[in-house]
Length: 281
Image (cartoon, rainbow, N blue to C red):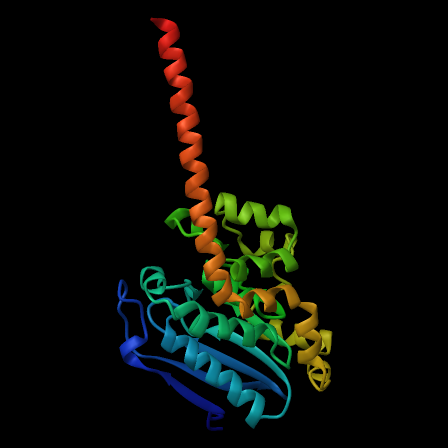
């Protein structure tokens, strides 16, 4: 029996398909039907599925095609690269581009968290930083129990957490788990991630399909208010994503205030040392 052809294939534009620090070949998004009204969206953007603009735009297009051209169902996203679900942003280029967060990354996250069908992130490998954030924007997460870690390692490379990055963890996880993630850069293997509520199950495609069947997600996908309910359920996250441009100015003001407080603290220390020095004379 010949193989069943994919429902569609979208190439990731090769000129932007990988980070400048880790060049790679052209990527793609391939959508297949894993079960009745269950769509498996497999992506690859070598070497590690960085969330660069072309990847994000292709991801958005794939979600649009599924919503507007296929019967309502469940969307599973996973990686065709065995080692990584996603290794996050091309950080250096992302912070240089003032349009990246409001025009590329945050629209993708908003689309995912308000998507009008159930979404499942099947994390076959590592999901670090922005890669884990992307998985958290899904309704459910299933992880390979044999390899891969989940980690928010912004502390390791000196990146701050933006409000739109942090709020999804506050909404979905306990504060203790979130604290351990961000202040310790803790790496969670699958079983520990399951215990902490970061993921909803372990396994591969078969286990994910079983999870979908047990949760009756295909049936729930037929509810016309599914996306609207998610907008209310995750309204704090949606608000932070929508207000990203305005938040940029607030963060700049916060940076100035932080610098002012730092200067005041240094002056207090200098004044104290001057008093101590005079006392020694």
